[in-house]
Image (tube, rainbow, N blue to C red; front, side, top):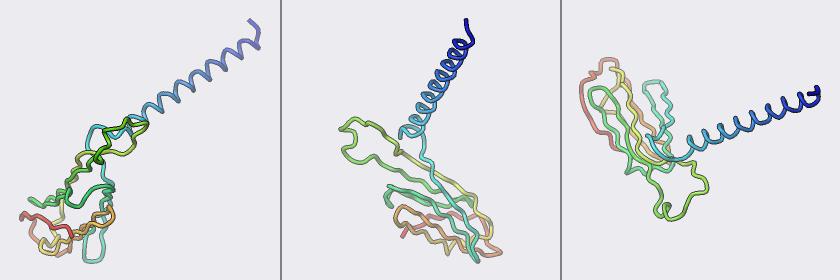
Length: 148
């Protein structure tokens, strides 16, 4: 076999390998963005502002009524659901990247959180929860938070 044909074979094997890798990456991405199975991932930021803690959660497409916030034994629990639009099942998907289903996040609260002053607001898919800080606050009470 000549050097030219050996080089051609090596390059063909390399092209075939990259093609196979591309197919695997594409299949992986389709699985990741399929919109099926598992809990939703909720992007969350936590800030320490002067005199308060702030938690912000991105919940695009989630209705305010489908979100609940509770505090029990010093743990903040935010849970809810993002529902598939009505009639979406009637047509086959060409591609589906949005995810639907249940979500739940929990956060231990510092002892310095003042339980009576907690406020939650939901606006344009962003849930913001504000926790006033107090130096001597106890951490053993339970509460449900109203969302404005």
